[in-house]
Amino acid sequence: MNAIKIASPAKINLCLNITGKNNDDYHELSSFIIFCDVNDYITIEPAPEFKLDITGKFAHKLTNPTENLITKAVFALSKASNNRPNLKITLEKNLPIASGIGGGSSNAAIILNYLNQFWNINDSDLIHTIGKKLGADIPACINGKTAIIEGIGDQIINIDNITEEYYLLLINPMTQLPTADVFKKFDGVFSSKLSYDPNINFSNWLSKQKNNLYPAANELIPEISSLIKIIEQQDNCLYTNMSGSGATCFGLFKLKKDAQLALK
Image (cartoon, rainbow, N blue to C red; front, side, top):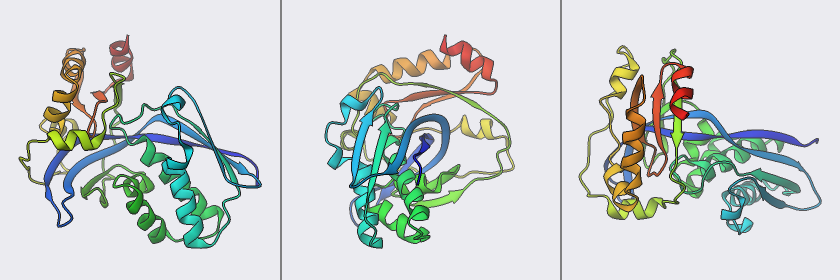
């Protein structure tokens, strides 16, 4: 085995409805997700024993490798499949922590997908089960496709009819926003599931959607609303919102040059 480097993309919730609570008191949602070309990078290579090194812009925010989702994913799959985790994994952490773009979940999903093949397990049900136990976002990240997710995030409806190309401008206020804190502030007013019609214009449909967690997140970090106002004032911006539980905000553009101009 030679060292292999894999991109671990950000997951963006373009819209998000909180639809209720399940019997375990977990909030259920309905959300349209995409994966974009903004990545952490994971390098995997053989080693006498398991080791996780963390580099990159946000490495200093992850001080305990044993609590990292990568480590938990490796050892959970190792135990379930009776494989020794003789691996050195280097995580280049480029995505901000606790920012609503699923960085840690994406990291774990990349590892589960890779080891499922490398260890010749080839059991997608197993890695989805392990992923769900580690984090609600992980099954969708294992799937890795544009989708509507429901339940606690583990019910996945793939969306494959969007042929147009769009560009995202992502802005984060560089303040961590733990998901649990946002849900504590959530007002408890539930919405219906997303009703997506593949026969209508996607950007028109999206422009009518929202993120139910936005008010709660903005109460914790008021800068979020300021960022969204700045983004929506940019020329030819089709749609703005906050991703997930925040605090990353984004603008959707049809043309790359418009997104680049907005970034300046």
